[in-house]
Figure 1 (cartoon, rainbow over the protein chains, first blue to last red):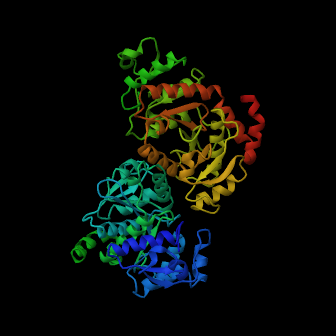
Figure 2 (cartoon, rainbow over the protein chains, first blue to last red):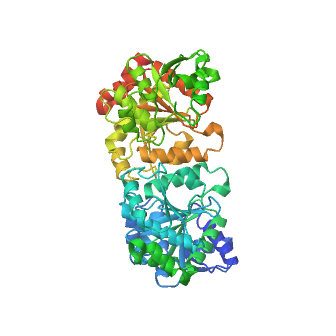
Length: 297
Length: 297
């Protein structure tokens, strides 16, 4: 029920994904979904309520047990679906996922991982907007989760950069200076990365706090000169104990279908298990992750 | 002596500015300047030393009395020049200006004001990179100084937005939430502004901390689709008690000339006096500034 043109766009996207081999369950108002021309043949789980973009997401999710995003998260929690895609409020989706599914063991704070089609094979930006005021340790955790995501997407040895105002060590604010020290022991970390280098795809994973990451992402979205260079339509909630993707509210049917295919892909690649392995290995998670890589490859 | 191709580019830029009516004094190594074909007819003040980009700027400026940027700042401090343009290290230029010229009375922390050719008449971004870890009050001061700069550039009633991850009140991190409350009493403040709106020129002044502002600026520089949309080649140090501009290290001769013309323009418009008036008026500086505007217009 989320997104600017729901449920028309979400239903059309679901149909396209199903035709491409993804088994889709639509969760929302059964009558409104049935009224869509593309709805025929798609499985529907009824949810009487939904959550709007302007609402207090955490409160609405707690109070509205029948909200579509909560019902969908419940399906995932019970193993009836392998992942969840929402084009609604990111805050509501994150709140529903935390309430129904919880976090991966060892994760303190989930972040938003956005896959941007930059460089040769794309980059993962984390955090793209979840954590507004964080400690340096959160950036280390974020780097490990984003690296697991990059591996789930097929990057064998992801490199990691810390988004910063200068490439030299010691640059930046208190957060980035302290985070750079913590990240030094994380495998794949190559140091600070300035925006231009990040945009060239100099590293596979760009780590930053959610405030800076969201400003960075929205600046890219506003300036990207061609549609091909606009960020991918879906972002992954890294650290929740299921595959949960948030599509852009303005996503079209093709982008919804793409998000559903990506959900299937990263669920099959064992994203959450990879994150658990990375984090259970502690500060030197990188090397342990490497050791365990064969099990997932 | 600063910039990637100094002194060739700085001398050529100075010559172009002088031909456009700006009286220019070159400060640097007399022999190296004299070897430039464009140097003929330009006044030169000799400085035996200079400061490189990789150096500890504050330390080098303190220790090297004969460094070109310090000699140039000294000329300004003694009233022998109306302003200073440097294509060298921003940190060294700021340190030299603070040491030789000092701050405008009432200013706690100078910031970098970048003029970006966005929207109909350009926007002033402050802080574009000086203050990495600041308190909310610094953003209020920054807003008042940037508004004075916008007025010096001819904008009669500048509007001010706070760069943020959402337009709604209450969005953002601790810093932006607290700063939004302080800014509410500043004349011209219209609330939070997201990157896309800032890039459309929805406000005349975009206020942010120096870390976020520098990431924002560098992302724009990396993505701006046409040369016309790239940020202006010079930024103003708002809050130092003289007109001091920092050109990009990669600025070409035309951009150096443009920076010199801009230095003349904002010096004539009484930038520092405007900032003093804005800040001496305290929290409701805006109205006092309006009252004093006729004196400068």
